[in-house]
Structure formats: structure tokens, C-alpha cells
Amino acid sequence: MNWVTGELSSGRLRIGDHLPSERALSETLQVSRSSLREALKVLEALGTIQAATGSGPRSGTVVTAAPEQALALALNLQLATSHVEHSHVYEVRLLLETWAAEHSDPGRGDWNSAERLLGLMDDPSAPVGDFLHLDAEFHVTLSRAAGNPLISTLMDALRTSIADHTLARAQALPDWEATAGRLRSEHYAIVDALRSGERAAAAELLRRHIRGYYMETAD
Image (cartoon, rainbow, N blue to C red; front, side, top):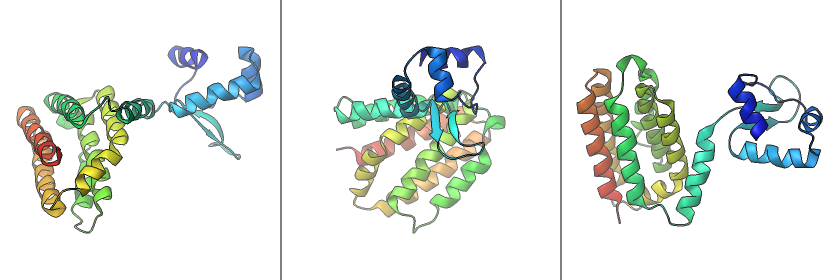
């Protein structure tokens, strides 16, 4: 892990590069191939690398650097031990998303992707789980307009780790269709404010949006 970190920091390794073969790496690091395999499994679980079998340019071990995977794993452990509660998730979402709105730049927004997601969420026949997945992707997409990749990475990890938790709460609502309709309407208003550069208004709309859903799904 230290070797990979050092290579990435120095620029000798970049995202998309292939790692040397197991034999070459074990000789370079002077470790056994079995120890090397265990270390590579850890890096793959953390989202730093991805191993693929077969032949061709996509085979072998590739540097992916997907930090949201490691963060999601840590958050999942916290949720499993009940150290993280529904209210904690709500508070973190408020902090991340309102900050992103307050620092957004319309020129950095991926509005085509946001509109595509809104269109998919408009489908009344979409299952609850699909809607929630699109909803989470939509919020992460909006956050990227702030130009801070760590914010969107944290949000991506958060949405991955709480997916099952969020679905269970949504399925327990007495009238999901009414809730989904309200969320759709609020989404369009938030996008309009962000695209117009109305940062304060967008932050307030997001605050109400997140708070309203939290209150609706709270125990």
C-alpha cells in the first residue's frame, strides 16, 4: 500500500495505469507472492485498484482510485454497529449539500446529466428502489458544480452506504407516490436556482428538501 501511495504521489503511477505483474512487484518489494496477493486484495476492496482476468487492454490490475468505495465501506461498518443514526446522516447531508450549493458555479454544472436523471425520475412506474438510486445520483451530480471533488466523493460514499437503509424507510411510507411527486417538484426548483446562479436560494431549497424528507421518514 505504501508503494502504491508513493508511486501515485510521485506521478509515476496514474489513474488508468496497469500495475506491474505479480512476479515483478514481488521482486521489487521483496515480498512473497502470497503476501503480495493479500495486499492487492485490500487495495481492491478500498477501490484503489481493479483486477480483471483475460487478455487485452482492460485485463490485469489497473489503478482506479475510487475513494468512495473505501469511505462507503467505513460508513457501512459504522451503520452496522449503530454508531451512525438516521439523524446523523441527515445532518451530514445538510452540511455537504448546502455548502456545495453555496459554492456552486453554473458553468461547472453537468446540467444535461441532471436533466436526464430528472426525466427518469418522472416515470411514475419506476420502482421505489430505482427512484431512490436516481435521486441519490442526482444529488451527487448537483454537488459537482461546487468544484470540490472531495464533497462529491463523500456524498457518493454516503449514498452507497445508506442505500438499503433509505429504501426500507421509503417503503414504510403510507403514500410513496405523493412523496415522490413532491420530491420531483422540489428537484426541478433546485436545478433552476443552481443553473441561474442563485446560490443562496438553491441552498435554502436544498435545506428544506432534505429536512422535509427527513421529517417524513424519521421514526
